[in-house]
Amino acid sequence: MENKARNYHKIAAAICLAALLCVVMTAAVRAANAAPGSEEDPVVTKSYVDKQIAGAGGVFVPVEVAAGRQLIGGAGAEIILRSGEAAIISNESNGVSDLTGGADLMTGAPVQPNHLLLVPRDDGRGLAAHSDLWVMVRGSYTIQ
Image (cartoon, rainbow, N blue to C red):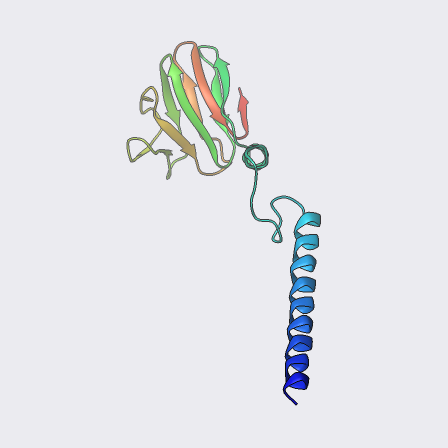
């Protein structure tokens, strides 16, 4: 009787081991076939992160604006004055957000160099160049 009980325990242990092995192998196959960055494989590479940032409009581009011209930002455009003198162009009731200085700048206000400006809507807000400017812009814009 004791031998039969031992045999049943061995058989049960073998079945459990085989089931566990099947589960582990299935998980390994699924992980190997998962796309990087997907829900099944959340670990991502630097190149994947860089691609996602670039797809979100990610980088600032240098833009030269001649004296007397205007840079008009689209909705969500970010602008940093790097050199030159400029003034804000806004609408009657709302300005351009100076995120560095924590202020809402209205038409005619001088632009401080190296301050991050945000154009909240596509309604004609931006910068008027009093001298030749170099600005960094992220997002859509037009030069007029």
